[in-house]
Length: 148
Image (cartoon, rainbow, N blue to C red):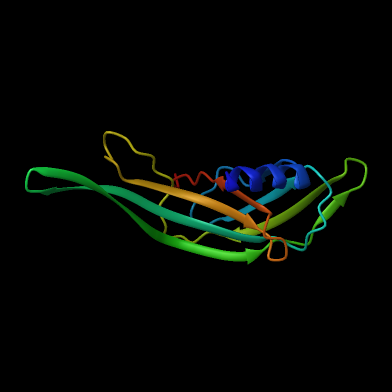
């Protein structure tokens, strides 16, 4: 219930928070450029951005007659930085935060679970928070494609 109340309050105060990727498709060894759009005027300092590449897989363990699964989560890459200062659009009453993040060359692209990969996935997630306002929070799955 507490999560629902925080989410409702967050939406009421800041409106919708969306991610616009200006670099698409994203690939390793490239700059990721984007804009975080806040649908209401937000009196916030630059946002804290955390981009993570996380590998997840499920291991099946048999103990006697019982079988259970263990989910493993390995952080392959992690980067945190502040966004650019906010830009306010007085006509639309919205706020935008732009950013540029350098992706390393030695990280894998996004991989969803399939028959070939089994339960092994690689996901890229961008988490957006405010150091001054703990109620502000957004998270986005960011597709990173293999270099062709």
